[in-house]
Image (cartoon, rainbow, N blue to C red; front, side, top):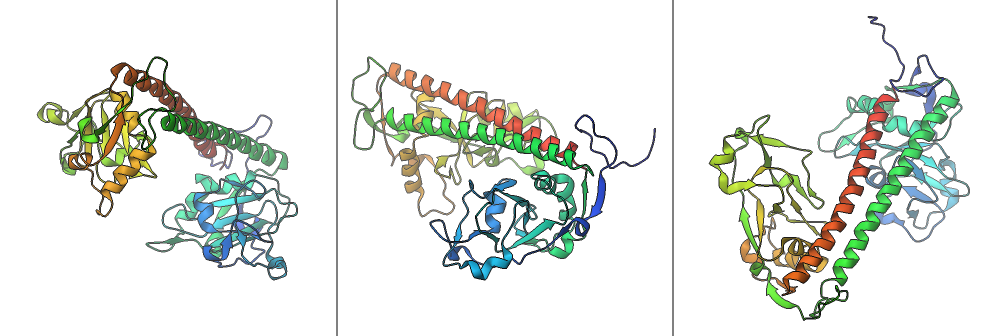
Length: 425
C-alpha cells in the first residue's frame, strides 16, 4: 500500500484525474476593497442607491450564493454613490463574516447576479477577490466546506465573540483543479443541488402555511362557536372549556447526569423537544434497569410530550409525539388527553391558543408552564367525538405529508454535507 499523500478529491467527475493545485490564500486572492462599519440603524429595506451586506445576514440569512437580484439586501439610508464608488463589489467576490458568537465565524457568500446594482460590504466583513481567471460558484462552495473551514477554526481569536482577520486568512491554503472546466462542473453541481434544496424548502413552507390556514378555519375564531370549514353532517355549536379540562400534565423525573450511559434507554430531555417535534440528534441514555425502576416516567411510541420551561419558540409550542421508548426528564411533561388526542394536539398548534399560553406566562422568568396555568385558558371544542376524530385524522394525514417532505429535505442537506467533504480537498 502506498503512503503517498495525494491532493485529489475522493469523488470526481469522469474524465478528470491528478492532484489539485494547492496554494497560499494570498497567491490566489487579494483584498481589493474597504468595508464600512454601518449599523443596522443606518440601513433600510425600502429604497436607496447602494445595497449593503451586513455580517449578521451572512451568518443567518443568506445561503452560499448571494443573488443580488433575488435575495433581500438592505440599502444604505442616504448613501451617495460617489462616496462608496471605489468599494463596489463584483460578481464572484467572496464576503466573509469576520465575527460570530460561535464557530460559524468565517462563513462566506459568493456574490452573484450584479448587472447595474451597486453593492458594498459592511460591518464585520472581509471581501476577497480572485486575482486571475475565475468562474461562478466553485469558490463559494469551497470556502464554506468543512475542508477549508477547519483551517479557520484553528486561527480564531476571542472568547465570547470569535473573530478572524485578514492576516489569518492569509495563513490559510486553498486547493482547486487547474482545469477551469472542472471548477465549472463542481460549482454548477452544488448550485443545482442548492436549488433543489431550496425548492423542497419552499414546498415544505407552503405545506405548513396551508396547514395553518386550515387550523384557523376548522376551529372557531375568537368569539364564535362554529368553525368556518366543517365536515358534512356536523352543525352543532362548539363549547367553551378550560384547557385543564381536556389536558393533564405529568412532569418528568430529575435524573442525574451522572447516571447517563453510552447505551440503554433513551433519555428525553428538554433539549430534545423543539417547535418541529422531537429531535433525537443529541441523544443520551439511562441504564436499562431504570425502565422498571422508574415506571412512572416511561414514554411509549405515540405518547405526546411538551416542554414546560420556555415552552414556546417562535410562536409555536414545543410539543411532539415520541416515536420510541424513552424515560422522561424534568422540565418536560407527558400529556394525557381527555378527549381525542389527535384533535387536542392540533388545537394546541393554533396561534390563538399559543398566544393565550404566552400571555398566561408573561412576567415569569423563566416562563414555566404548569397545570395551574391551564385552568386560566379558555378553548373551544366540539362535543361530538366523531367530529373530533375526523378533524384529528385529517390533520394527522397532513402532518404525515409534512414529515415526509421534511425527511426528504433533511436527506438532501445531509447528502450535500457529505459531498462537500468528498468533492473538495
